[in-house]
View 1 (cartoon, helix red, strand yellow):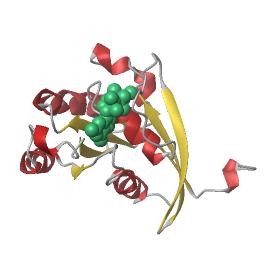
View 2 (cartoon, rainbow, N blue to C red; view 1 turned 90 degrees about the vertical axis):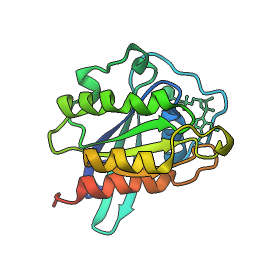
View 3 (cartoon, helix red, strand yellow; view 1 turned 90 degrees about the horizontal axis):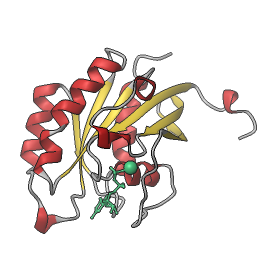
Length: 177
Ligand code: GDP
Ligand code: MG
């Protein structure tokens, strides 16, 4: 863009968290229009993508941060979380352990990010119907108990991915002027 500063009304940093392998990088690349990658490699470090999104109350410039493999160490750096107004917390609907671990990821996010930050819980890989290990109901209950929004997605089929990010960004910009 010619002048990023003039092309948006809001700026928001959001992070994508959750266990390794749940589909974070593919959710992110679907949202930022790079498509699904079957052979996604994770590199060590931190990566972010930018996306401009038109919402009812204006245009938001989202910086979406991806863990780029660091989540394997079960914890992410302060730099990763600093200034984040929201998170997509993802699990894999075919892996109960990734769902159980959401509790730990949520705690870390709430300890490290803005205290008023928003989290959208994502049950990803809902295309793998025959392998499902976590019901939609269980996802909903965990979300309700922890004050989260909730959606199931498929990064593979590009189902609900834009909706998930949009839900998060609408909530994150609700109180901005
Ligand atoms: P990350 O480690 O959380 O970043 O996960 P990746 O995005 O690297 O994905 C891990 C693996 O799951 C890759 O083999 C992807 O192709 C696969 N994957 C990601 N999202 C989906 C999905 O929605 N459905 C299916 N069937 N596979 C997925
Ligand atoms: Mg990744």
